[in-house]
Image 1 (cartoon, helix red, strand yellow):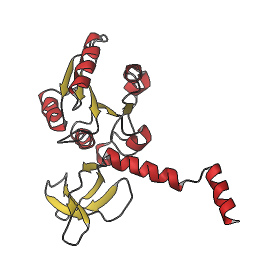
Image 2 (tube, rainbow, N blue to C red; image 1 turned 120 degrees about the vertical axis):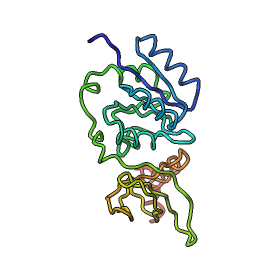
Image 3 (tube, one colour; image 1 turned 180 degrees about the vertical axis):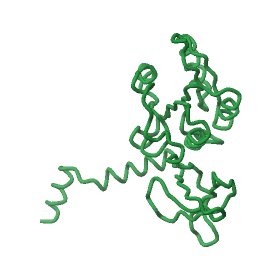
Image 4 (cartoon, rainbow, N blue to C red; image 1 turned 90 degrees about the horizontal axis):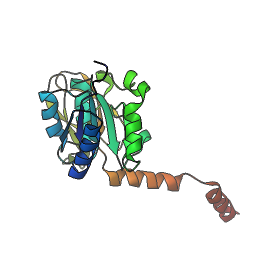
Length: 220
């Protein structure tokens, strides 16, 4: 039926956002459900698979990063919009399995534009292939040797193992499962303050014309 609107699942830990977006899209004729975190979202998805998922990235419990990784692997037909006010589209879409990105604070009109753009509804994202979606995991701390590590659950054999992450700055890492030797791609969930710190240091390290002139004058 051509007039049937896509069903939506809105995931955000802020109740005001869930309520306001649910109200808006219901008014536009969509069937809308909502969830407060990734775990609650997976319960809703198992009850009924939505056509479109709009998910915040920073949430307690299971973050949006982790949720989208699971959704892409288990429910690859769902269209996904990642939403955040702490990250940019370049920072997110380079390694998160999402079809589009909505920056919070950009206005409801922008989200409606994404929802109503035919190319987005018709074309598939280059990240839609489930095998290319990294597993997003939280940092676990440091081991007895002082090395940072994470606990990885292999998506093939479902067994867990610890993995030292060292000082690598790569967005997506890869390793072999110690049990079944399957190749695993994984990424570390970064908190907003870490992203802001990275952006701050990049702005200091990247010389602007004025800064270059200052450095030249000091060297003379």
